[in-house]
Image 1 (cartoon, rainbow, N blue to C red):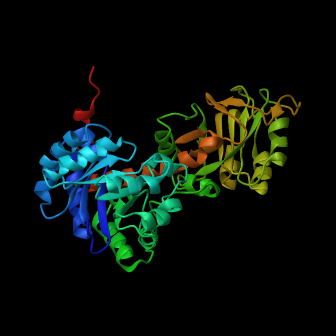
Image 2: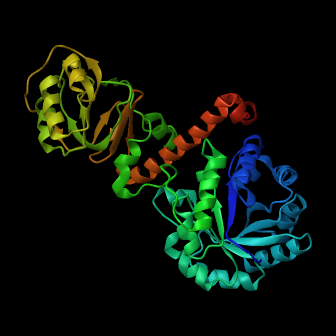
Length: 434
């Protein structure tokens, strides 16, 4: 495979061809060179997706991201017959599968790209698959790895220098990172979400094309992955529904009402946990002195109806920089708290306060709103409610929630153009059978 310039390949990782086709048209208009039928698209729509894409883009190289693992010749052949010019085989496949796939492709004018996803020694494997006839290799950091902060740049430069065939790279590339990939030696830049999740795909593709051609970063406020030190910033960009979606609809607290100054308030912070008895406000107030700026105090008051939090506690917490308080019990002075602007979530409201008797503990596991909360677990809240995120998954879930939001932004744009949610999602097609 000879490439005269770096290639921009748009990955169409949709479940419905009806969405993939218009997205591809916009991407091609913006400067995409190759069109990829992504693995989800091929699994949901079958090889018919290749046939339709080939009809729509006869002058563009069509990539079938089959991720073949066995029966190399057979799977490459059927993809080639459906219109594919390039078919992916996993680098973890047996040598015989790759060699057989290359031979099968030769019969129909299709080449093989070997995807190095999960390969322990990509340099050695690249040299071997080149000997077997692979036209290119792809250094691929998968989406699940991206959510945990992995990037493709750790190995890319070394691999590009050692590879006897063109190197493709995939793994959360944006207009801010493709230039670095080209400088590192990548010749095929595979971009998915930074194009296909954009409300304006043509413009997004143009920005990426410009970054590739000039080898200069083009600023973008979207589609990046957030590191471990940026968890709060990431969570504050998304809604609590985005977070529960990212956790497969888990983690939501139930029965706690938000008392927020306005609808734009969002809360995100590690939990300082408290358990107390109904009406005993000593430990919740003591927790203010234990909390750091940005923490969320989470109180298990047993669902009680006597207030254990009020205006003065809110002033104290506000002064310490505490992000919010969450109470499975009662709060009072809500009018003053709303005027102050300190976020409070409680199961009930009562003017009646109890006494500071000192029962309970700080820094223990609690159950609030039906959810287990440990010290340091992240709490994300807004007008829709609260979600608990296990501390060990916080970075991953924050990035997944951003991904949910970005997908919604594209769907919102398709609805704005005249579609409906049911039409966009093809709900009747995807209703569960049986």
